[in-house]
Image 1 (tube, rainbow, N blue to C red):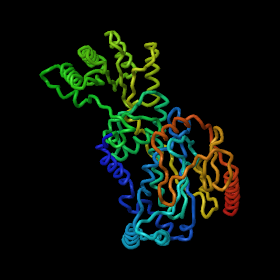
Image 2: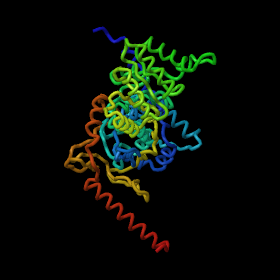
Image 3: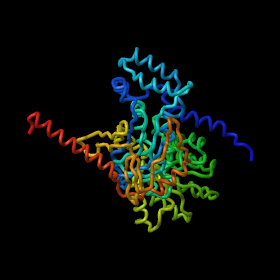
Image 4: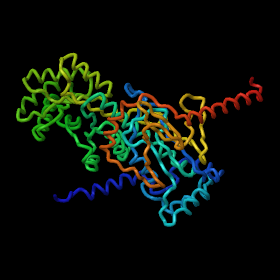
Length: 490
């Protein structure tokens, strides 16, 4: 076989894609200011080995989610801190800036001096290990999904970057919900992404969650031709280009439809430029009849009564004696809207909607923000001793200990790393001593999402973690009661 002429460019672009996620070129200030102030105040605590957990406290507020989430995004999220080693110059430049020039003149010298001392060369790897669910694993809201372990003052720096797991996890979960609603791929693009790298991150997560391959993102197809397949048809910008005050709107619309099909031999005709149920309908049927040489001319509806239009176009095409054509329906459809369109079609025609093709559009960006799932990165152990963050709000209390998760039938068990558990271990090592060790292809992650989605009914703490919780809660209750007594609060 001849060598792939695109391989070198593709690999260079993949490398650049993940490199763009790395701390703005190695700037260790990629964190919250209070990390500097805390760990400069208590260097002994900062250097002690600690554990932190990432927890999504809430599930997606969408029908069918049932507090289930799908892990995704390791490749991009871990690249933020671990794509390559830091350099001594990175650390020393930050030290000079924060110690002498920042408005907050604090720097945890002892923490970063320890990193410098542990590395003999110019490249600095951080003494951090990360455990968590592999890509595609279904888990439940409220339980830890990742554990970050190492000197606490260093692990703490990761918080803003690791909380960003909310985006790929939400995207993968949305993809699973859409896959449950329809056997058809439901993706035309992610043009709402603020920047191209976000587009690619979420497309990969969408593939993991639901196996979606179709996209109008041409870069994604070039970078990952084994994962994505481009789709393209007529847009409104072409449809309106032949308009003028000197000719009927219907004539101008028909010209653009016909020229496109004549050139490409295939199209999803955009019928709502003038009116989807009159002018657009007539023009679409006319184009279909004018091109008997191809059966790859369908229609696309994306405004108005979508369900009704799908039935209308199906019946009018059938009345021509033409075999069913693909009918794409859009208008930012959600999984619930897909089900509704399918149900209306079945009720009106008595047939299965095998020719209906959902285009989800903006659905992929709805609710993609941290507060949707309430991503929380909290310290859970210091020097082997469990820690806890209490809360008066339900669901915000952390699980103490260095967490690992096991499956026991349809129950997920959150345990301490030091205790034996009767169950299948689900956490895998993602990062070892500052180097990413998780290497799994996206197809395997996709298959895991499909296999685990309906598997778990609930989660529970292990006996040891439950004991930690019980002891901490008892201590808290007793001390609050004593304080109230001292304060005269009764």
